[in-house]
Image 1 (cartoon, one colour):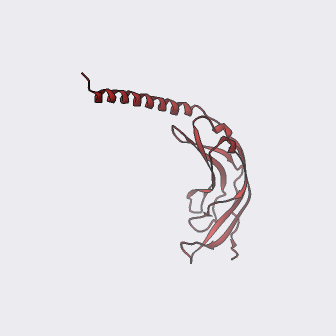
Image 2 (cartoon, rainbow, N blue to C red):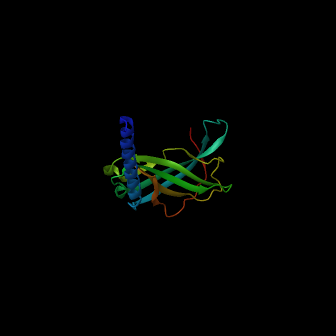
Image 3 (tube, rainbow, N blue to C red):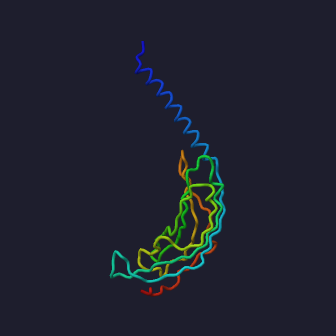
Length: 178
């Protein structure tokens, strides 16, 4: 005779196995739902100013200020397994020392398909500064709008929705007005 404990254990093991198989099937099927969102990214203005940092008040550092226009239709990315999208505008450049930098300067979270048509005229949300304190002799910067699709079940999916066609040179730094 089987005890009640062993019967409950067998039923719960069977149900949890079926649930894991179902979740694996959902995750695998989401990988085949590829979409190619389209968008445009225009950098209206890139300015560089010299200023003081909070961390080292006696050290001067160059800060970049970017004005941009983003237009993108991300509705193809939303399907039954999409929880939310994380969008971010990234600047990619190589500094004078040969180090490749990828800096996030703006981001947004999109939770609904109705909000997935993006039309933003804005400026950088986060500080854009060079770790070596000067943008001088850096290679031109490429800007791109990237996304991270977060599903209910499965792996995160990364992609790129828009990219600037030409790289932008960093202008000479101007002294910040206090």
